[in-house]
Length: 215
Image (cartoon, rainbow, N blue to C red; front, side, top):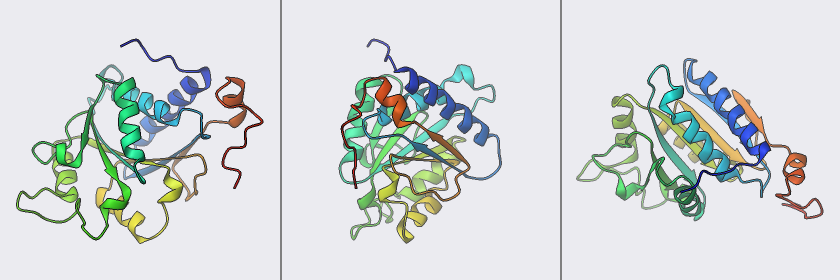
């Protein structure tokens, strides 16, 4: 596959995001980073490139390894999975819950979850079963293996309010939570990276006269 060519603003913001997250990784405790980017700016591609650069062993003096959990609403986690597989085919392992092996998220593996299914009536991801396969045990096993968990909450403005949202974050207790949205709801994040609408228009990704999310 040919190397993915990013627009200038995409490359700059990916690098800014990587640098800020690397800074947060050196601090104690779990940290929240907001990635704010307009609809049509290529959010998924930018986040994919950020994850690729973050996990690059050449940049990791401390030898850190990562596992990723990507949560989104409706069927957007499917769309994100397809987009990332197309553009970063050999950089990550892409899995749904049932694809995980040995009840653990492996190095550079992205687990894609549907937000509505986490705490729905079936509680598919969090209930105990005969194989001990549930989200809590998978998260614990992954941390025990010595990897940092990065949680990506896509379209986070749909999900970041209410008790379930708090519970998801508490249950996963990721080292870094990256909330991705065009219209984020701020809660005093530890870092904030913003892609400005004007830069996206200047690169021809969005026409200025098109109204995006007018509401």
